[in-house]
Image: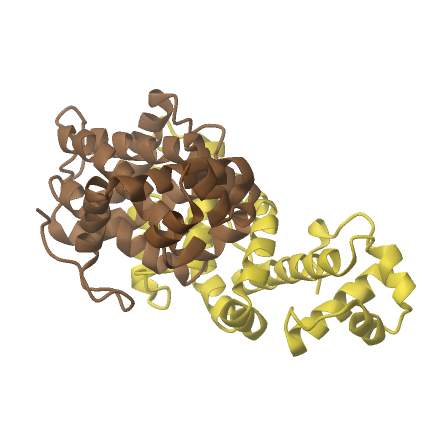
Length: 197
Length: 231
């Protein structure tokens, strides 16, 4: 399942096949063990084809696989959340569903455990794009809400997107499994300065 | 000094507010030889980054022999980098402590604290350079589970200050959210939050953060000047 709006321009079938193969290799053996050779074999293409599609070599390829995994994650998350019109429900459902998805993501959890220095910087590279997408979703819904005086939709969307990602990645003291706790967090704090209740 | 001692982290035995106090004390009490090498290390790292800096480079910059450098830092470069971090953290905490104590209201406190940290991230010759050019050295310490440790330290640092304005059970959640806000803007500045523009930080605090720190079930204890409609 691919998120249509985030697919790169040069999304040729060959490129997709190679990226999928790279992800499969990483899922099986980890980032460190992934080689261009192994990925080419997995994809059923020549090594030359891989290098032509990814001139940056293994490094570029691994990063592309990580990016695709992030895109797929958020596509799945959208499906989990379903149709939501208001920002409060979006955040409440989003935080809970995202946390659950992250906890169950075996490949990510193993990478964080064994190869943090390989995975974290690559995720950091792709995060600004994720923030942009989140910000757009939030802004769209905020624009339909009654906001407190002085609140700017773009600013609020930016801040909420950043905080959401922080909370999803590192829930810390906040219990994302408890719907009441999530409700208090979203309504009592995150949106307290934003929505005119 | 603090309202209550936070629970010790799983990693450190001693309570975190004591750890943080110790960093500040170490900075003040470090001897000349150590401090001289730390300053030299900062110069080298600002110039070449952490990876390309060796203990020999640092010794040369400090104008001391290799033997001296290794004697002061028998743990080598890694130990030195750790000490450099603690010195700078201690130095920063010392500098900001007085400002924070002088804050007369919760929002003044927040504006002061947020501005200080954002300025540090932007202007510190080493921190800014490392964040920009060697992010892979810094980011893993702030991502996913590792953030828990950072949040615990932030809480310890915030306690004595937030505790002046908030009920005790509100301090930890407040410190958590403030730390997250500060970190995200330190790593990736937003156009509308400018540490050099006090009005923009005040706007962030007054519009978006103050209401989040004083949930509507609790009367706001923020600023006398602020009109609050909470029951």
